[in-house]
Each structure stands twice: as C-alpha cells, then as structure tokens.
Length: 186
Image (cartoon, rainbow, N blue to C red; front, side):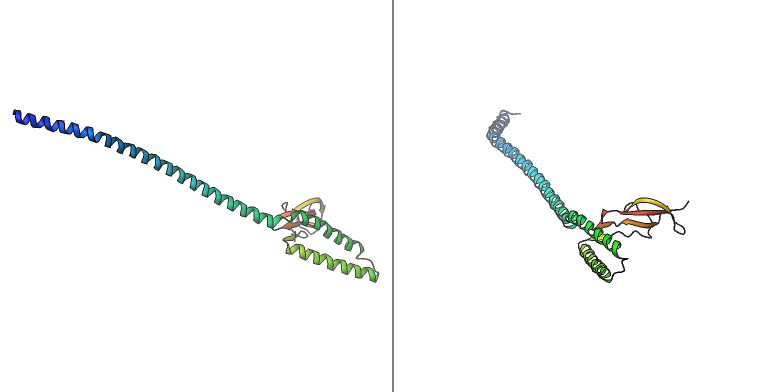
C-alpha cells in the first residue's frame, strides 16, 4: 500500500470514529426510547388483562345476581306458603270430622268449607305450590315419608295405601313430604 492509500484508510477510520461518536448519543436515546416503549406496551398488556378479568367478573356477578333474583322470585314465598299449608290441613281436618253429620246445616257448612279449601288451594297453585300425589302411587323417598308399613291384600309391594298428611312441592322443590303408609307383602 502506498502512503496515499494509507492516509485515505486512516482518514476513513477517523471519520468513522467521529461519526460513531456522534451517533452514539443518538443510538442511546433510541435505545432508551425502545426500552420505554416496551415498558408502555407491557403496562398496556397488563391493563388489558385486568380489564378482561374485571369484565368477566362483572359478567359472572350479573349472572349470579340474575340467578339469585330468579330463585328469590320462585322460592321467596316459601315460608309464607309453608304456614298456609297448615291452614289447608286444618280446613281439611274440619271437613273430615263433620262431613258424616246428618244435620242439614252442618252439611251446608261442610260444602262451604270445602269450597273455601278448594279456592285456597287454587290460589296456592297459582303461586307455584302443588300437592304431591301419593295414594295408589309407588313409594318415592324423594316425595314421601313412610310412617308405617301395613299388609295389604291385592296391592303391590311399596304402594302407598294411606296418606296421613299431604305433601307439597313449590316450583319443583319439595316443600313438605307426604306422610304415608306403605303396603308390604309377607
């Protein structure tokens, strides 16, 4: 290499060194901006995750509230209806006790009490309360409570032959089980 060529190479290297010194602060600023941008992106991703989590929580809370509201509407009057069942039981016991009387006035009273009982049961039925069918049905522990077993000729095993107390279901949920006597064959 000639002296001129060497001088050109040295000049080029010096120029490159000067340029790199000049670019170095700009590169550092660029790197700092990239780092800051990455932090901002990470923060944005974190906020996005929190937003989605909170949105899902709100949706779950809304569904839970709707379900609780629906259950409250369906079963909120359970306590009142349980108390009214006792009134129906007493009306039916009264009719059962005086229905065999031969007095004409008593027969009219029985008819009146029977009408009131039916009307009362209609109102309860409109509010979701239904009677559990028991007589002649097979024993089901989900709806019936066996008080006794009794021999019964001509009846299949576990058929309900007597009902001591009627059972009731409120909107599909058992409110009170029927108290029954179940047939047995020995």
